[in-house]
Length: 342
Image (cartoon, rainbow, N blue to C red; front, side, top):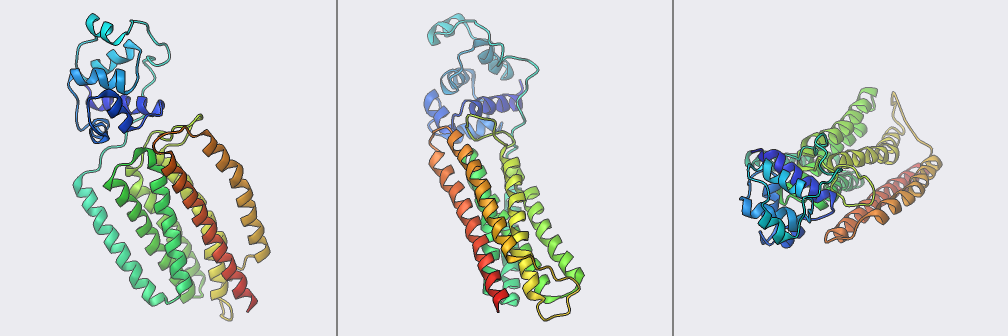
């Protein structure tokens, strides 16, 4: 019996066929809702044989008896009998593709225990409190609001990449923790930029921004899927990789339209060792270029998504992330243009 491999194969098969946990539960008739499927896929439970057969055949819509028997073997049960084959209208035909012994599914993310979730809650409170404290000393409404918008981008990314693998409170806490870490580190970076004109302060700000972005991914990645979990007509990224990709995009935006312009304006009239002032026309052209490149990429992704119960939520979060990123960039560029004009 191998409960972990059973859970991994079950989840990999479900995702490959674009089925949600609720759909599997409803189709099988074994469970009333997706909570039990979620526990099954995290290896918390192993159903009895009488439940596994309809879960695989009706829930996952698996018609290959070799694959069904593989599930039963992993669970430590005997193979399908003639009566079951007849009842479900199955034959003993083999599938070359899905029964390849060397092809093993990727490891599913381990469920987070209650202790770690408690630590996450404490970390959210600490980061949020520190962020408020820094904001009091910063006293720059523009910087405080834009730092908050920047942090919300990360929370939106976590929710977006968890749409088809929503883990309830774990996903919500991961989104809040991601935003809290980015919120406090970005505020601290801005404080360093405007409080000290030295070259060291500039590098400290860069380190804080980079550290916050990388740190939040390292912390919350356990709440994101290690498997491609967005049903599409092409190969998609895993939840973890997709959030890391988004993090890279966010860093490009924050350095281009926010961190460097803030440093430039803060150093005006001061003997700064390094004053980086990117040309405003270049930044507007850069934003336009990002926008034009993102249009075909977004169309390719959205047009390839398969319809399902989570499609609307995914689309909403996808557009929210895009609008939020565009709004933050425009706000920073308008502020920068106005500051340079005075």
